[in-house]
Image 1 (cartoon, helix red, strand yellow):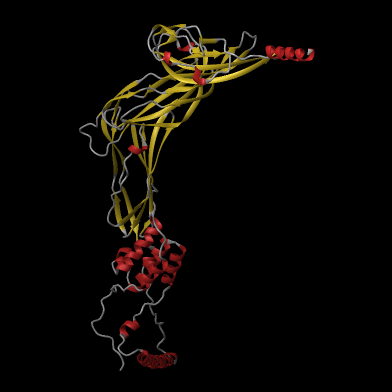
Image 2 (tube, rainbow, N blue to C red):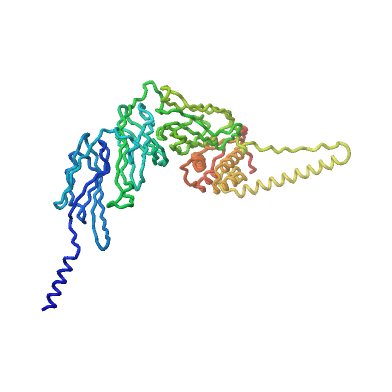
Length: 546
């Protein structure tokens, strides 16, 4: 009986001595008072127990505040076997009006905090050096034209350590907005206080005339601030959410001037450049590479017009795809377009490559100007393979008419001539017997033969050397015709030859050239018809020994 009572009392004592967790107090505080209208402050709510997130009702704050992001954290502390728990809410609030505003009591499980009387000042009344975080923004101009690039710069000033955050672009309608380059991390000193500065640059291009409104860039994140806990002698870095927003901006957008002519391009400065080799030697069939660059200050690469070359009919043009880019140099935005073109002369002679003019509107002088490249005079020489082969001539050595040697020489000449005549008659008889009945003997005797130039053409085609192939083709066809032949002359002989030449040129000089059908091209050249010889043919039919 005594033992049973003892055990009952022991269990009761253990139950009474066990810690009981129950919510007993709710506290609220703000990180600044007075506050600024429209700027965020942090409302901290602490409960001395582990409670559910949904147990806190914040609907009472919506009347006088803009409620931003809310974060919740929990902690447990044990000191001398005494455990305590805590739940903390941090809410971003932005006062809607100036004057005195009451933050109502916050209630959790029937336990309420004390209300807070908050004084709200007008925007701009608090010096920036008193703030831990703020944003400044600026635009390059308050008046711009349609299509003109406007730079919008944002600077985030941090007087405390940044833990994490997001810098958001301003909201704008009726314009193209994109970031230029990477963020620049630096530092500035304002009224003796050192700030970390994160700078970001945006490009802004208006699509239509009128008034362009920017809401202002914004920041949302967490910073680390010093905070002492429970009156201890040590301070700790505490994560605190913060938000900031830049002031709104307005830009007046002007329409395109009525007197402007050409593709619309507005800039501070436009320059045309090219890589051109002076005193260069040019030949038919050898491509000329022309690199032209168009640069514009304070413009976007999408605004740069394409560069078109107007050349004589004796040139074939193979432009590559233009390369565009926009970059920042010496705090200036520069747009660049690079155009590479392969120009292939098809006929020799002297030519003038026309002047290139790009119209643009100078936003500073309010006038239309032109970026130009001067005209170029070039001389195109025939291809080296087009030169006529030297004619073989027989030189009869002079002999002394006196003595025995002239008679002996004449006798040997007669014998050689008789032998050649007999051989020729024998060959003609053999060829006549070998020719099938009904066959055109003239066509057989004039069948094309494989020349060195033709073999070089086949090798160049199989090796993918398009320039060598065109030169060898001209040489082969010139030898067959007995006169110089240009690529245009060769292409006019037949449809297959024209297609073969175009296929070779596409393979070598066009950026979208496909694989060359080598065998098809070689067959077209081998089966090519002959061109009319340079000299006038005799009207007599060739004599056939019957």
